Length: 69
Image (cartoon, rainbow, N blue to C red; front, side, top):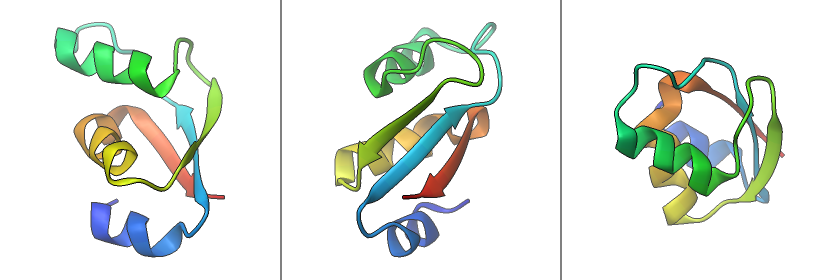
């Protein structure tokens, strides 16, 4: 999902779920997941709608499922 659509859809924040394993991904992507607070597959976290969080989602979006809160 493009970042612009994500920003429009989420006024309060995001519900982010890790859907794919980070094994085999670059170290930077694993560090982004750690920054989001995601450690295990199917783990879900809630994060605010900020430019920093949107950038992190854009970087590793292929591993995530993102829904508006």
